[in-house]
Amino acid sequence: MQQRDDDIYASAPLRRLLDAQTCALKPALQRCFGTHALLLGAPCDDVPPALPMFGCWTSLHLASGGYRGDLRAAADEPLPFVDDAFELVLLRHALEVAPLPASLLDEAIRVLAPGGVLALTGVHPLSGWSPWFYWHVRGKLPALRMPWRLRHQLEQAGLAIEQAQRVGSAAPGLKTMWRALAGVFGGGYVLVARKRRRLATPLRLKPAPVRVPANGRLSPGTRRSSAL
Image 1: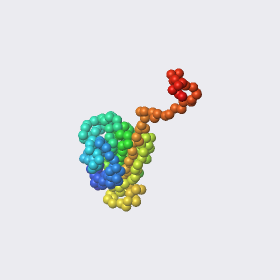
Image 2: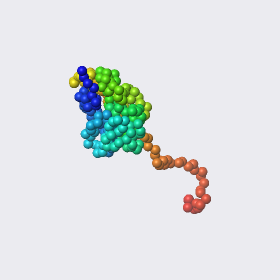
Image 3: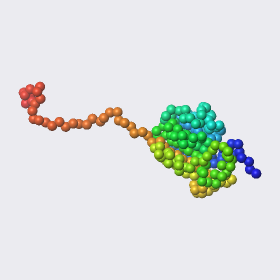
Image 4: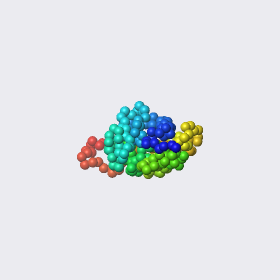
C-alpha cells in the first residue's frame, strides 16, 4: 500500500508538476525586470528561477506556521517588508500551506510595486490530483484554492490578469500528457497578474494664454506722444 510522504512537495509527482509550472511561467517571467524579487514557496528547498534582470532575490518558505529562509517571521502576521518593495512576487504553492491564505495574498499585493508582476502556482482542486493531495496531507494544514476565486480577488485589488492556465498531467501517476489535454485537465495552474501603476499627478500646471479685451484707451503711465 502506498504510504503518505512526510513532505508532499518533495514527492516525485509534485516535482514534475512544479517543473511543468516553471516552464509555463518562464516566458512571462523573462519579460519582467527590476532590482528586487520575492519567492515565497511551500517546498523547503525551493530556489528562485534564473532571471538575469533581477539582481536581488529574497527566498522564503512556509514551515511550522512560520517563514523560514532569508529571514524568520510568523506566518499569521504581515510580511516584514515595506509597501511596494518588490518588482516580482512569486507564490509557489504558498497559499496551500498558509494559515491565512487570503491575508497572504493581500500582503503579496501590498509589497508588490506598481507595474510589478505577481505569479501564483498551485494544485487545481478540480483535477485528478485533489484526492491524492488530500490523502497525503490528511490531518495537516494544506488546502487547495480555486483559481477563479484567486483571479477574482486579484482583479478586485486592481491587478490585470496576463496569464491563467492549467498545466501538468491529469493525475499524479501520469508522467506525460498531450499539451492540449493539459490545458483542460491539467493538475496544476499558473496565474500571472500585473499591478497597475498609479496615476501621476502633475506638479506644474501648463500655462494657458489669457485674452484681455482692448478698451481703446491708453494706460495711465503712457504718454500720448509716444503712442503716435
